[in-house]
Image (cartoon, rainbow, N blue to C red):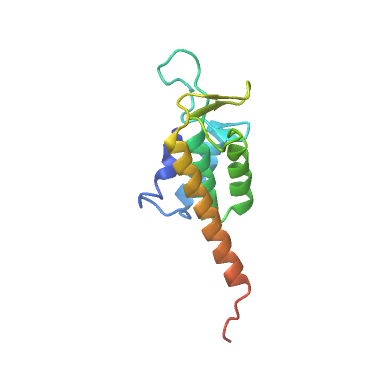
Length: 140
């Protein structure tokens, strides 16, 4: 299992709301989830000495995927959990050690910031679409 599977809809391989993608997102959460964040792959071994931390870009990919699946409560929880590990300037590292409460790896990490922006845009778009359709009148 690899959290990069969350990118499949982003590249047009499968629709976000396809049953296979819904099950994939759930399986990724179950197998790779750690304290509300995601590891990149299940064994946590990237070939380097020591165990890697959660990969923050993956957590933001999950937030985007959940938002685009219409699972806004889960998407917000995931987004807020990942967002909370940034520093006081809003910068993020590549990885995070949730047990030690410290950033790991490359800092600042551009991929993490891009995935944060993409997830925030998705949440905004989905919420905007829901709020604009909620107040619209449908012809009889």
